[in-house]
Amino acid sequence: MLSVCGLSVRYGRAVRALENVDLEVGDDAVLAVLGGNGAGKSTLLRTISGTLRLHRGAVTAGQVILDDQRIDRLDPAAIVRRGAVAVPEGRQIFARMSVEENLRAGGLGAASAAVRRTARDRVHELFPVLAERAKQRAGLLSGGEQQMLAIGRALMSGPRLLLLDEPSLGLAPQLVGRIASIIAEIHVQGTAVVLVEQNATMALQVADHAVVLEVGRVALTGPADRLAASDDVQRLYLGGHAESDAQADAEVRAAQTSATGVRGLSRWAG
Amino acid sequence: MTTFVQLVVNGLGKGAVFALLALGFVVIFKATGVINFAHGSLVLIGGYLVAISVGALGFPAATAIGIAGAGLAALLIERLLVSRSRLADPNSLALLTIGVDVVVAEDIFRRLGTTVPYLGAPWDAHPVRLGNITLFSTQLVALVVGLVLITAFFLAFRFSDWGIAMRAQAENPEAAALMGIRRSRVTATAWLVAGMLAGVAVVFIVTQDFSGIGLSRTTHAIAFAAFPAAILGGLDSTAGAVVGGLVVGLVDALSAQYVSFDFAKVAVFLAMLVVLVARPSGLFGTREVTRV
Image 1 (tube, chains in turn brown, orange):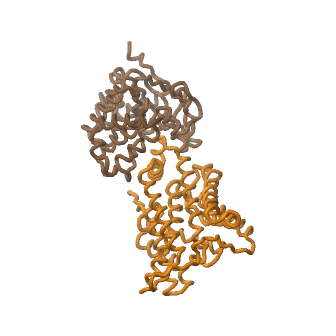
Image 2: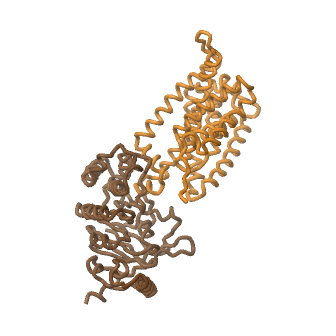
Image 3: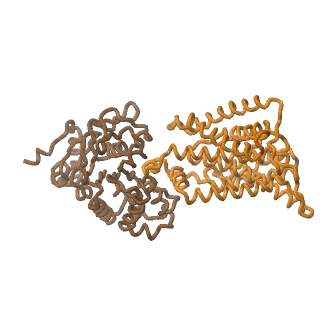
């Protein structure tokens, strides 16, 4: 469904955010994109969803292809109409509008009124709380409810590909589990998902494939269960093995300086 | 007392016209973040089109042409100048609109030459007497038209897809884009609506009842009072624009009667200053809050 080929992105002349990134998302897949701060995760989502230019970034090489069509030169609205919708980092719901109006805004990119109606039923089924609080101001919802609204709003146009940027950010552990199960359910209902996360434990549980970005490059890629079991991911993102904070920091630095080429999973597969 | 009632009704009538102008001003600001200093020239374009066509076509058709023309002129400014510099700083775009205003206004004054035409409103200079109270018909018609248009605007703004898209984009342009809302369509309709409202307003401003003078530099100066109206109401508040317009109309009418005609021109700006000292974001504007 989505393929990113040799993608390089810059902000201004100096900041290289992505360098020669390749990845594939199948028609019915959940891809987790992991990485620390500044790894380029959000830049990747901005490029796919077409908002890169709003952040004064530019694609310098490579392309993004959705269903055999290049989308990296399209505006965000055209990309939504082709079936890829993003939930931005920090939720960014319309706080001054009601819950219902937020959902209506999400449905403005839908292909037809029928798609909108089906999507609304699906959203209310997934998130009954949004139906209960339809008239409430969105800014007055709790953090978890706001995240549900952000996801529900994105589903209103009936997307085939959902791009989620750190949906677990700032949520209590219990809510993180709830969001994870909702993502799994959205996937089961037939929507492909790209899940950008710092919470690697949650992301690797939900995803079937994963990509690890380090300073703008793909450092690791492979099936999610294998990545979850790999030493590097354990050490860097799942908090395993390190004896002390100092050792963990040193290992992170060592791993980052050695991350020049793409490490294949073959090292651990054999 | 009768004078006071007379002044209040006439002030509200003038206020409704200022409210239409301020509403356009605020709609453009909300959709694009640009303070449109060319609003006065949109008023002049509408007025000029009515003035040159009213003789041949009659008042209703000429007014329709004026309203459409002002709307199209606003749309052209947006399409040709503002939308092309999408990432430009809104302050630079505000300066750009000053340039547009100077060019358009001066060209219209050049075309008018020494003529100062009225627009031929059929209700002009026919005062209505209710007992001891004398009311200007122009202000009464303006009040009715203003109420109808403002109500229609608010219904659309609150309930239509256009209104939802406008409000979503005003609140968070990036999230709105991610919902598939076409930014260019929202900003273009905002300018179109603002231009058309300016086209309606000029039909009332250029009358003996309202300004006492035909289409001229005075029209441009009067239209500029929409600026304090929008500011004191709160630049990002549509409801504030309406209240601001009515306040400006009342302050203008009351100070002209009780202080002096010349003071009325300043009083409007004094009212704006007083409001801004007490509430820096205007009466209904969103307060700027920064977390430190």
